[in-house]
Image (cartoon, rainbow, N blue to C red):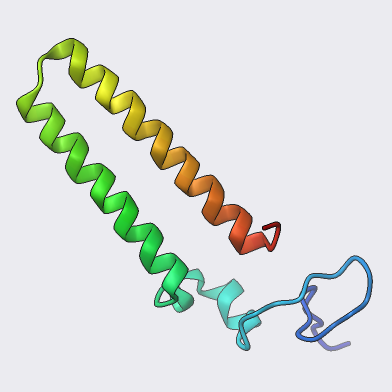
Length: 92
């Protein structure tokens, strides 16, 4: 019996997801294969910006404002991650 992936390209059957990547088997084996896509690049850039802002806050602010800034940046990071997961799963 041959290996049949759960995600089929072009499948219209109910209950199955349609993969946008022509290398769906490769993507499951090596998730970093598709890191060059625009959405992933934007996500990585957003996380890098949040990290830089958090480091700047660590070196320039006192204790209470720093914690507030970290909480706000953390909320933005979680919101960005949730949006990426929803986009990857096709829920948006």
